[in-house]
Amino acid sequence: MNSSFFAKFVTIISFLLSLSYQALSQKIDSRLAAEILKKIEYDWLIAEFKLDTATISKMMDDSFISINPSGILNKQEELDGIYKNISQRINNDHVVDSLYLDDVHIRFYEATAVVSFVSVTKGRIKDIPFTNRRTRFYDVWIYRNNSWKAVSSQGTPLR
Image 1 (cartoon, helix red, strand yellow):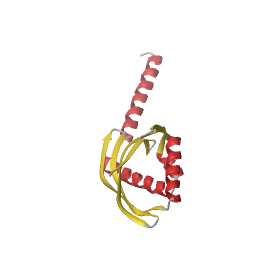
Image 2 (cartoon, helix red, strand yellow; image 1 turned 60 degrees about the vertical axis):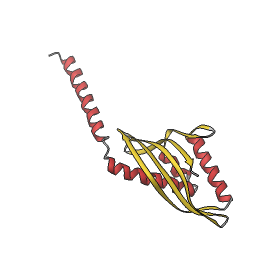
Image 3 (cartoon, helix red, strand yellow; image 1 turned 90 degrees about the vertical axis):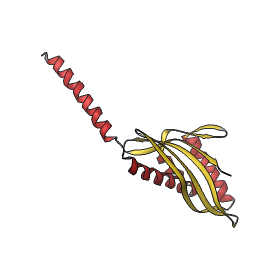
Image 4 (cartoon, one colour; image 1 turned 30 degrees about the horizontal axis):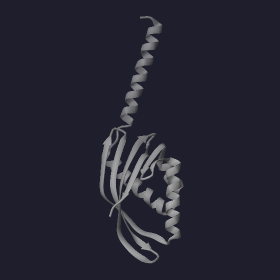
């Protein structure tokens, strides 16, 4: 066997083994991943109510897009919108006292997860209480470099 051919053969086999190892290491335990994603979704909303866009930014992939009635927003536009929205709520004395996730559905597609849920909040606006304010979310997450990153989000207030 020619040494040049053998070197190429070994290189190709090494590359294929490397890909196999990466694929195995990216294998996701869906039960554990579902619990992690629920916590991340909850943490995102808590950060939003605390006006902590730095924490939210770390949860988002650089290619993130958000869908809303005015169109499609990139990561920075979404963060700016979150900041503006929550700032207005704070200025209007809109306080969220509690939050929980309801009707959570998570579907996995290899290293991608689609998460839908309803956030249910309770609080007050200018000392007038509100309960069970509901918003349905549809988020897409990717798993890379050992962490989940949001690539897309859409939220719809429910009546």
